[in-house]
Amino acid sequence: MNGEPRREGTKGSGVNGADVDGATIRGGCAYLRGWRADRGMTQDQLAQAAHVARGTIIRAESGAPVNVRTLSRLAKALGLTVRELRTVDPDTR
Image 1: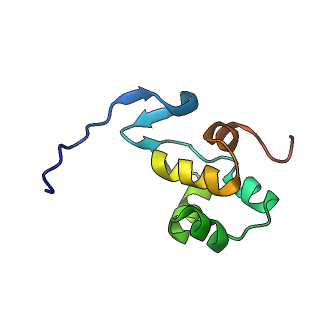
Image 2: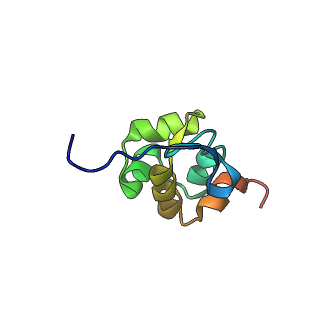
């Protein structure tokens, strides 16, 4: 490997009460598509702003687990906190 110690994840309660398995949040972006639309961004624009691949946006919007670092990048690119991205429906605020 690269000489760095391997980080072992633990299952349990994590960021904003999410189920965390290592650095992945299951069910992490229920409102991502709505927030992206609210900001008038395409998947490509959000991917570029968050420094992630477009495929990551597609997977996250379809309910796939999201890496904690990715979730943080997406929230920042949308001008939100991680908590807002995960818990606030942009259509009802």
